[in-house]
Image (cartoon, rainbow, N blue to C red):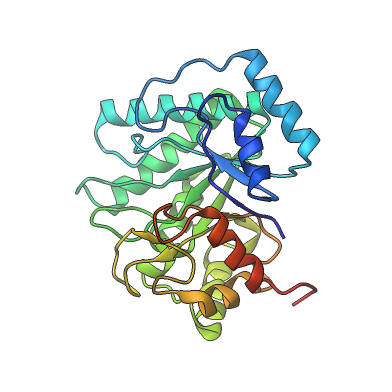
Length: 283
């Protein structure tokens, strides 16, 4: 079972490996830099080497990075889009420097200019970033919860983006359970999960699905509310996650939690719940 959490790089990026090990993770996700600003300090060579050495010794076969919060590759605003593209290029380079397999990016918001504009902007940013970097790292587009002006909450939107991308061999998809549920996809019942993943396979293709974010949802089915909840404490519930993580199309993928850390629970608690729900053997 490839299960882990989004861990902090506070102090030094290599400390993320220690934190993942403390949680008994078998995979993990990080920000490679401060996610709340545009400027990123340059990765020191010794930092990158320490991260890679620790990671190899720990035996992590897959590590995931996540784009910072500010970039919006769907933006119709020229200066904002160019800043976002620059950030995406920098992040792909950093991932290659760290030998990270996957970089996850939210698809973004068209800011009221319409879904067609947003789809085109995303595809342009993806192609431009790959042409500039020719990365070994694969860029994964993450589905959205369906908030106002968002791009990529429907599988059809993601398919349209992929159809416009030239460098498709460098691109995959990350699915977030909270976002799926909030966007109206039932990932709670066995029948709903089967239908959702069949739709994904028919529209996008399961071969494109590389990473899953496991987050319970504060909002109900189709609420369009992007609010993560502790595993089993939200609308999807323990039984929903048991059904989802044991599905034949999901169970062998890297699974990452991005749940809250508060007085009700933390990563250790949520990971323990998921491990208790996972059924060993072929399903």
